[in-house]
Image (tube, rainbow, N blue to C red; front, side):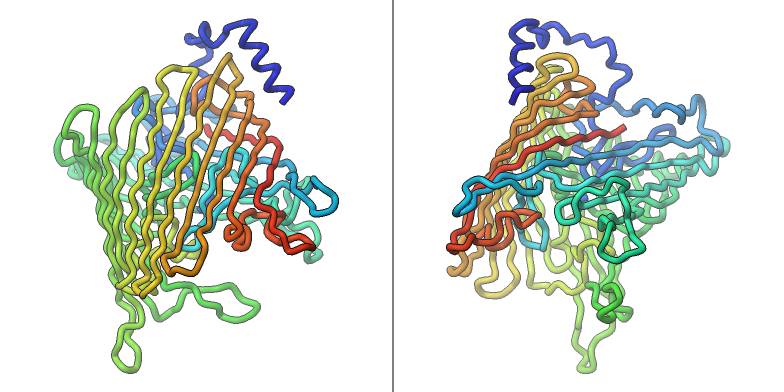
Length: 518
């Protein structure tokens, strides 16, 4: 709060926000996010040659997003035509630490480890608004290396992106970031290392008309709501395909074929869960983008079909099923940014629409019944009318039907973040979010969660997406008792009733948070 007061004093004394519109250091900062391409666990783009923007948490870029970013020191961006061995590096980082304040029935206000608020939504996922509400360290580094540079502009690239996820809610803070320990249950953080991007592509083949061919595991054409880290359109996975073949003007066609496993099963008490070896499926993903009915608007269409080739049971009946889903999205440029309105509908395994397929979440599993369906309506608007004021807001409605009487449920979500860059290298950020889940069985009470955050920040520049950004935050949340019973916070600080059986229905956290991409 003292920093916030200092910031306001700076505004009154310098009226700097009205005079710093022509920052001289604009060429050395990333003032816009990478293109959308964060399960929770995102990151930015690679350049020369341009590679896919990969980010589990990276936001959707406004229309004026910069297409290239400076290479970090020690790894200069190649100049001239791509050459064999040219390597570029991009990346993403976020992390936070802090504490919580909660009510005790006898002692009054008590202090505890930092916890983060979220609401369980259909599909086994969590919904939360991110500002001052992320209890982990997440980082990724995307290397792109030219492995072939031929005549007539044909090039091939190898993409490799190791990521590290360190949860802090249960384990605490490890000074050396230990991922494993010789002594069980001692200093291990529970960190995971994964490789969501590891693939090869070939670009510039003349008869592909601007398209490229690829194979491997990758983030693929993801669309997200940045402020809630919600990847509503995310067909990523292990596969191969041809993308961005130019058909006419800006219209481009992409096709990908992805592996689909059955839902993981346990192979024993001491072994990890693995997909069934007797199940086989493939997900076909077709996308048509660049349909422009007018200059400032675009229509994007996606269709996915999951083909099931698994064996039948002894009675000749299907044990597994495929599915299908369709996405229709309209993108409209507005106020220095864009508005995206999406409609999605799917049946069976096609209800997933997002998250990675293998081992992450069984979104594209073969074990969904064809009677299951999902309808989702989503709108997300990002605006930046000036270089010192920006905002993003979203509304989501999702209806799930498990194909049985009383098995329908609805999820509503809405929130917004506003960033005011009142002077160079300083912002004041505010965010509010609300989630509501109701099962239509007439028995369960609705679960809801409302969250509010205020965060003064040091930053590279005043823009809404300017990074790095180091924030001091205070978050307050309130929720229903049904949400508390279902575990409303990651650290379970507020989950259990006190010695009188009374649940705490509000709480707050405080701390520091950092985020950057390059």
